[in-house]
Amino acid sequence: MRLLLDTHIFLWLLTGDRRLPLPWVHEIRDPVNQVFLSVVSLWEALIKYQLGKLPLPEAPEIYIPRERRRHLIETLDVDEGSVVALATLPPLHRDPFDRLLIAQAIALGMTIVTVDHAIRAYPANCLPLPNP
Image (cartoon, rainbow, N blue to C red; front, side, top):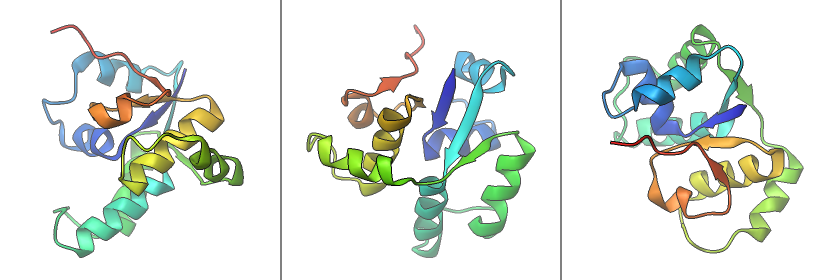
């Protein structure tokens, strides 16, 4: 499976946050799966860090790529097909970062890993929420 991590999922993975469901941790760490972090997430982290809304142990342009590599997560660049796919998305969510992640997942046939209900409302393949 090709997994695309939402930004918060990546950050929860790094910090061991208990909000990240354990079955998802297993899916992310399963070597059978290809796991990606979009450059869109780095862009989002940079902006939120600069606005003082995202505390990180060091600057995101250093921290995010290093931790992505350390966790064996591949980078996903933004391609033209994904940007074009934005035109097909219904206006369910206004967050431009999330909309581009959704478009990438749809255009590239990936599964999004997110707890964001607004993202999950789109016709994109999302990793199923674990049973409580």
